[in-house]
Length: 383
View 1: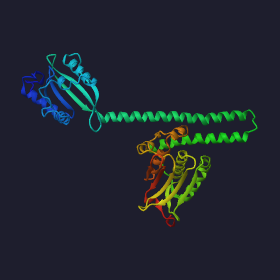
View 2: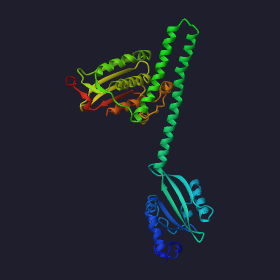
View 3: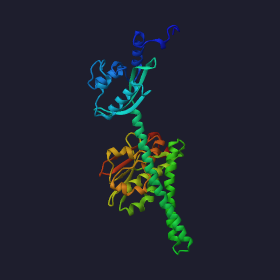
């Protein structure tokens, strides 16, 4: 720039070049921007402002020549009043700048904007004001998701702390009785063992999820005979199903190929799915397991129950860590679950490059299918 004509000496209201520079500057802004004179009259607005105004029925000129306070009056709207007060304070020199976030409701969703008002001074006096409205909807949605995640984690920690205290109190209590010389050592030792295994399973769930999310879980791949895994898993949950008044069933194709996978994780997938199905199926129901190779070549392990089912809107929630459905039966079991069952299964399946499919409806039961890609399906004759 020519030193003989510095920008600081330009009179914004007498030099055409200065007005052109300001107009180009406003047009380049991605935010909705308007330039007001010292009385609040709209001198010019940029393209985003015009587009936004026209979507709400604004004139082509987008209110140029009108007073900003009149255009955005809405005296019964607290956000409009807040912005009006901020603008007046900035124009009078009482504020160096102003910022206010507000919601804007449209036909499809709720958007959020941040109003920024800054003065343009000359000779120490406010000669004009720039008003910008920045769309911060994405930021607000991210904040809402973060808050929801924090609430879910808080609920999880509350449930987990209760779950940890219950077996620990049992271990301590029964151990103290045994130390006092009770005649029921064997019975109490069994109770201590059960409580300890329950506590260990809770801790393992949290540690497994942490490893998966950190990308530090390494698969120990080997040919897995699924019929054996299914048999072992059903045996482990048989007593729980009997106590719940449920019938267990299993269906498998003859001469199934093997699955190249981490055997421990496949077993954990089945146990988690079976435990969930048993937990949320009322007495008299049926929990069945099936293994088959689908028409597309994918190996499918499915667990189906006749339980309470899941609303379509809740399926995504229960697939997220710490998410749990809100129902009478679900609340009855809140102290027995960390909310990590299905998320862990999903993570374990995806570690095998597979996919988890949940089909359910409220009151019509649930079918969860763990699918594994064809490249992991191996004929027994070629292992």
